[in-house]
Image 1: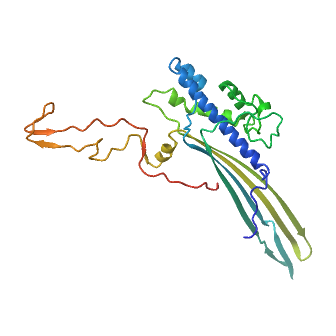
Image 2: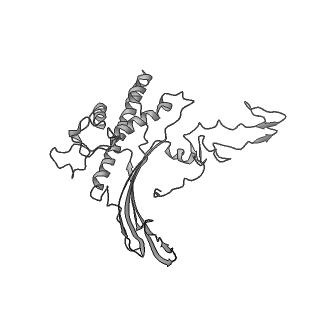
Image 3: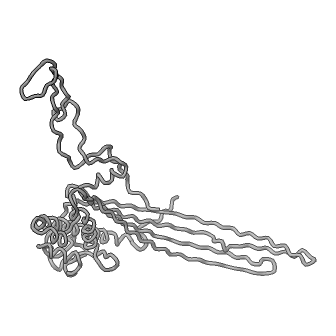
Length: 332
């Protein structure tokens, strides 16, 4: 209980974490910039040529008012003990050709699991920082790229890794090829196919992107000793020790409907506005007036019914119940 293994020792060590977290930050902010720029270009072209606008500028809509998030989990599992190959066989000759053998095969093992979870918020209206001086040390620099970024085409080249001389961070690559920012851009375009290019009555609104990347590395050592003589046939002792490190990176990218998407899983979100309180100006009570006649209003047998006003137009939606909040959980 008083000996804890630091999860930051292994394939991903404490010295690597600042640079790795900077790479995650820069990849995400690069994607945010692309998504915002593509949305502006799409809106400018969609009225004149909707098909070309979708092919060139399809985008995942990011809500700039919301936070994005990413979590990094490091977990180390240590196992040590005597293995099943341990055996103690005691032989005794009883006479008349009889032999007595007593077998004992003890096992003993212990396992310790140590986890570290860091959770980060990242504003989705974050922008890439301005120009930094060339020749300054990359490791101590906070910016993601050298020089200012002017156009969307220039930004997309940087996202694709086509100008590595301007990169001030180590790229995270999917399948050892495409940088993470470009990969997120392409996934966002595919998600939007049933939103931007679908009839308005049949849209499937992209709400949230979640990605989880896990890496597991195991290492260990096994030792065995065996002794055989007239009495012990044999004495065998096997010991082993292993260490397994699990690293898990999770990314959350939120669109305008992210909160509604999470609430909808439990039936806690609705797509029509809640009715206003009965008796309010938006929802007055039906009033029956006896024996009165007013011009312009219907009447029947001295009874008149005042009509309620036209309902309010549909809003974005509302929550039926409060959203639960859960902290990051250790993976199994």
